[in-house]
Length: 238
Image (cartoon, rainbow, N blue to C red; front, side, top):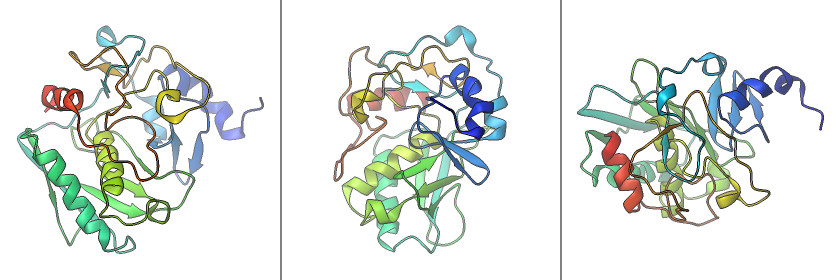
């Protein structure tokens, strides 16, 4: 298979970092990998400082090297005016899901201004995309949302998608990081050991977890509230 020009330069780097290399999308100043993870140029140059805690992924839950710091902390959520008004209710639903877990981070929707995580309207072949926390301990600040594909922003389906992207923003990788075919279908693929951004969360299960909110793909109209394993992972980190 011939790689696209922008992939020739980064294919090996993405593989080394433990990210999927199929279906990479180039957008503006960033790349979309694994369906919804947004990576900038500097992300591809990051050095990992947690190598002793990394292993080849199975089906446990994984976090990124960077997490949100300064807890207890309130993380504000906002949306741009191009997103339908129903997404305000959806983001309030996202906040409610997280806040019900009594974590060291709480979420709050704000109706004006730009929040710590700002949800913006986007087009593309994906439902939504987001990045990972900064090295300084702040959540990733932007989530791209394909509202045309998702539809009504107040549904449990939309809330599940936005809660998933918020999960990336605070440092979660996909639960099926080892094999995206588990939730996405297609041929099984294990990306192997990563040297950045895939740190095992202790205590999460070693078997398949069919209902995790951080699975890579979700069926149309699906709902994925936090299950017991998700709660374990959230409480371990926050």
